[in-house]
Length: 251
Image (cartoon, rainbow, N blue to C red):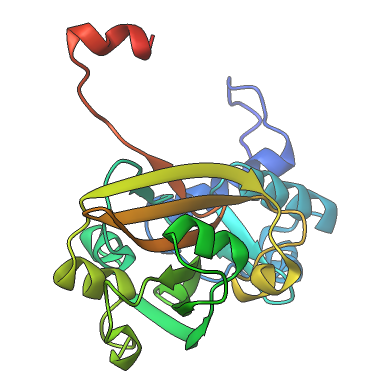
């Protein structure tokens, strides 16, 4: 943290020096994605600055998306925020693997249940009719990035509950047996329920991206899904071409 007194560059504040030190380690990959950052006390000892200085540097880096904090665990180096394609349907496992990540998942729920009123209405089923329900948490190198809640129409995937979703994701299975012909996506930002924040290892006030997806196979509503992503670890977007006659709909 020392500067030569002969330097012509204006001296940065100490917290900026700490930020530069951390960013340099990240850039040189001495601290790779999801690396657990040393404690504030350890950094104070290492850098010879105050606890307040280290705290401010880490808080700002977390706010800038270079670090993330897991409540009760520690501070970690953030991976480049992955982007999910908004206008396509793709397995989360495929997305993770395509950017060099390692996918894993926890199956929290897999059962037949009575269709709630809203799900029955969307699928055109009598209220209380049987539907299949699955809840999974998907991870990249052990870090939770998606809570996936899915209702499946048994008419489209009658053997859905017999699948081993430790080795294939629900999306991969459904896309293989019943390719989607139509889909609707709705995205919102919100605060998630406490049990979902806990599963995603999120601070209490961190916002989420929530993607609601309805899919059709022919005229039949196949699935109704809710995907929840920690706002600090994920983004959703797409690039697409617009024909000249449709440009007025976008601009």
